Image (cartoon, rainbow, N blue to C red; front, side, top):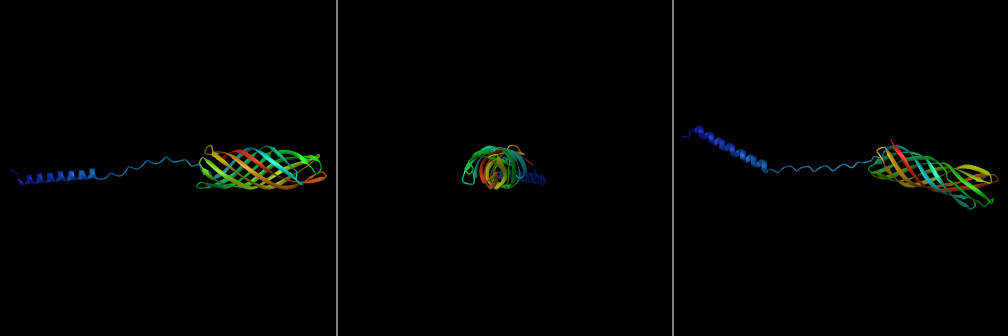
Length: 222
């Protein structure tokens, strides 16, 4: 004989089992949260901002012109140091740079006014320029331009005179990251210098020149 108490307990057990089964079905049937996609590996970005200093070597070809229309060429190796400061906004890099160096450029021609050979020699040169470029890591492609100065000496018939020519310089190049603090570069520059008057004994000659320069450099970024 089933007592009312036993009947009540059986009913409660059946109800609990049914509720548990329904809850389990709800858990297993519910959609699972999506598995997050793996993060793409980060690409290292070389920040070009900040000061730097370095040294360069190069080769120049020059064309000297004289009053009266005579011209002659010169060439030689150059070397020096440079320093600057970069700022960077996204991939755009811009800043200012200065250089100073010594030159082995010399040339020899003929001066028709006195009928004698004339020699030209470039000694010390320098420039102050703006730079702007685009960073395509680990490279920086840049253009540059500014004011340039060169100390030159002309010799004619045993007399010589030195003057400082002022002009402009334009160029472009590519810079590459070697390490976090070291960069290298290859650069082309064109410079044009105004005429100066040289007193050479009994005659005066007005002479200017332009030059093409290929330079390679290495710098330390601070």
